[in-house]
Amino acid sequence: MDFDIVTFGSAVIDTFVHTDVAERKNFIYYPVGGKILIQDLTFSIGGGGTNTAVAFARLGLKTGCICKVGDDANGKMILSLLKDENVRFIGSIDKEKMSGYSVILDSKGGERTILTYKGANNDIALKELKAGTWKTKWLYYSALLEESFETQKKMATLLHKQGTKLAFNPSSYIINKEDFSGLLKICDVLIVNKEEAAMICKRFKKKTNDPWASIHELGANEILITDKDNPAVCFDGVQRYSIQPHKNLKVVERTGAGDAFASGFVAGRIVGWPLAECLALGLKESESVITSRGAKNKLLRMSLT
Image 1 (cartoon, rainbow, N blue to C red):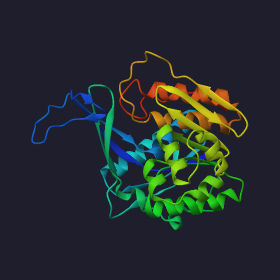
Image 2 (image 1 turned 45 degrees about the vertical axis):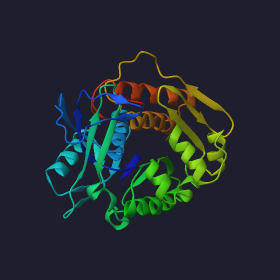
Image 3 (image 1 turned 90 degrees about the vertical axis):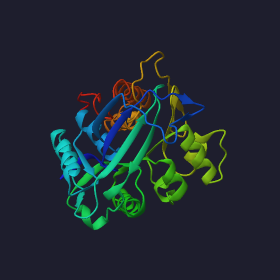
Image 4 (image 1 turned 30 degrees about the vertical axis):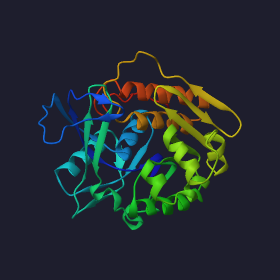
């Protein structure tokens, strides 16, 4: 079985809880002992592994997804979605642990705080994944911890020797808690936000005034750093490319925007687009996603192949 790309990351049920609570000084304040009315409640399927898998599949790429779900109703919903989106599930089902679950607390200003229960997501062993029965041109890693992260490292090392390319989107808890230096050395595309880039530089005692060059020295071939409403910038070791998000775009909810940008960018690299065009596709994906609630509802449908 041959894939254009296999994603390896989390799968969760997202519950969007929308309130009229305002933001103050980068905090969403919920009074202790208070009762707050929910304005809207929405359920969808999220997680970096499934979000990016669906994005790649909708762009016409042959896509596999490695994740782990519980043997429960939520797990069945996740597997059904992947099947409906033409994504091949090559992960595993846990008979004991529950599927992952997230609660997204939305504020009046459009920002959110996410509470996540990882469930079965962090318990993926290499022996569960039928390695050797499939091949892929690219791997896309989103953040997993514990045994699953160790499996990601082993798989990347194994497939890198066979010519598979790696795109890596670590989160702050990977950067703070795990040894990911080996992944950086074989990483073809690293995607992080501004804060995560600074954390990587600090972790490896690199200069923070030019995180692109500093991270490139650690081994990553192409470094894409996003910065919310400021330009996203990619560096290939020689040249920098940037793109400015559109102004006055009505933001409904930002969950999934990072996954959308990353998958659009990487999809362009898979089919051989120039970096400037990859940035444009990534931005188009992310700006589409933030116009509604749910990380997959507005992902683009178009064929790149």
